[in-house]
Length: 213
Image (cartoon, rainbow, N blue to C red; front, side, top):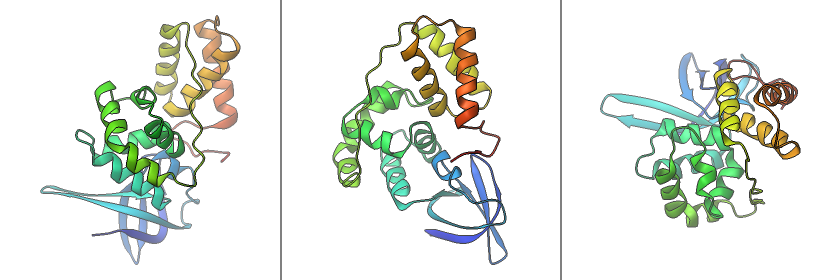
């Protein structure tokens, strides 16, 4: 079983990397939190790895930190959560926010990730609360500020549009919420325009390298 890789980063995108280790190229699927911390291509890179083996499948999942890997392992221990959905959760929330949502608990925060759903998020918080508390020792977990969206239809339409443009759901959601806190009566066109401006300053679409980290 492969648990760690160190080598040359041959290629990267927001979903996966290929690492050259002594002439062998290993593909590993990654969360966005790892993608944003990767070096430039052809640079040296090290990843903690989980090897997923099934009868007809052998896949590697890579993480910049061991804590990311441990949280990933917690997630896939929950019934109904496979490796790909666990990566989506890590990408859609972020490590510290996820731990905070599990410990608080705040299943609604986790249910906001595409593909999760209410029942799965409730299982996550119910089954993982104690283990997540142990993992988060020494990490400051701030509770999510409660925010009621007055026009959920506009919010959902804007979030869908930004997702289709390639922006990470977590970044798009935060940008939209920040704007709506300032102006709850904003229309969809203005909301999208301001969100795109905010995202352009702080993040990049999935298919592009992040300019500022």
